[in-house]
Structure formats: C-alpha cells, structure tokens
Image (tube, rainbow, N blue to C red; front, side):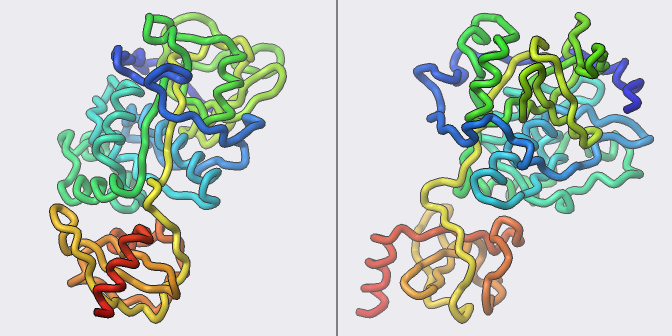
Length: 335
C-alpha cells in the first residue's frame, strides 16, 4: 500500500459528551452478544472509493461508521446493505482537510437516518473534492429519503469504556476482545503504518489520523478493516487504539421482512394520520399483513416480491403491521 498521501492527514478530533452512552454503563444501549467468538471476518462489506487522483475526501470516519453498521446488518439479517457514504460524509459536517469526530458522525446518522445505495449520490473516479462536498449541502430529496429509514432502523454508538468520558483515549486489549462479541469496534489509528518483524502494525507515537474497524483477532494481534484499500491490516495486540466505540444497528421491532406479496393487490389504505398519512399501503399475504412504505398514489403494482426489501427502491420498503391493529383493520373491512 502506498501511504504517502496520509503523511498530511490531520489529527482526528474526538467530541466526548458527558451524556454519551458507555458500554456497561447506566445509560447503555442494550448490549446483545451477536458474535460470541468476536470474529467478524465473514461479514465484510463491499469496498467503496474513498479517494482518487484529484484528492482525498477525508471521510474515513464516515466510511468506518457505515462499514461497522453494514457488518452488523450482514450478521443479524443475512444479507448486505450498502449505505451511501457521501450522504453521511457531507451531512455530518465533515470538513475537507480536517475530517470529523466519530461521535458526531454517528449522532448525525442516528438523528437523520441514512440512504441505501451508493448510486443515489455517487462518487465517481473523476470527481473533484469540491464537487464531492457540494458546498457542504446534501440535496433535499436525499435528506428526505434518509429520514424514511428512521421508522425502520435504530442506530447508535457507545464508548467501549467509562474511562473515555474521563479523558482516557485507549483501553486494554482484553476490553477490545470482549467488545468484539457485541459489534465490530470503530477505532482511531495512525494513518502511516509502521510494521514490526511479524508484519503487524506497531505504535510509533504521534497523532491519531485515521479511522478503521476492528473486526477480528488472533492471540498476538487484532484485525482492522481499512476500507480505503479494502484490506485487512493486522495491528499488534498491544496497539493503543484510540477512542474505541461499539456500534448499534437494528431493525425496529415493528419491522418485518416479507419475501412475497400475494397477487400484488392492495386492499386498502390504513389511516395512520400525522406524518404517516397516505404513506402506507396495506398488502395481504395469507394471514400475514404488511405495509409498503411509500406514496400509494404512485405505487407500482407488485406481482411478487422476490428481492430483499432493503435493496428495493424507496417506495418498496416493507414494514410489518402490528397484528392487533391488522385484525381490527380486517374487521372494519369486513363490516
């Protein structure tokens, strides 16, 4: 790997707030062991362009954040989603030649949602950095689309140890290995890798300038996914990873995954009112009721749904109807 461009990378500035969630703390997000072995090597996401010959977008924190969430999605739901990195880089306020804080990026996604599909706002190989950032503005239709993920997905983060709120940047290796049972771990590292005699990246002092995702381990090292080069980098076990955080990514409890819709026939709209008014369409598949998230007036009929809903367009994301609400609705239809 040619790392010469990283020599000019700035130090990552991390924002720590007293109210931040901490793993194992009182305000923790409910921790669920997803990978008892702590090995995520079979859940790697696809690679995306992070820089080209025209410059670097300084979006490694956003890329790492999305990569960790995509790994969790593969593990929990058995298939990949490809979250648009450019929306998160620009939307979260990343600054060219400066970068961003992991907590700021993750908080922006938690509050504003995300867009699935790199093609929705692409980063072609011939795009300049200034064009990429678009004046720091995400097009409104993409912000609107990102908001549509909020009723479906819940995202978040928590620092790996309480000591981070008290000013510490690193934790013991045992803490890293324990945390890997719950999620891949987003960490800050030195961008200019220096290797020991075993081929493992060692700490040489200096600033943290790059963000990667720790996703596996061996007795003498931890595996980091560096998506800039779509490669695994092995860090010494005693490497002092900066500001390690766990990611939380899940579908909300009212969300289901249907594979087929009977006859593709809509029987009625379900009145929800408020911001959901006229935005859901009820479909029936045997005794299973589903709602299509989108504008029913412009909905294209579906004969069958064979593609996974997470990879469909924005008008065809499936949301499960609460069974009690469905039965009540069914009575009203038959009365």
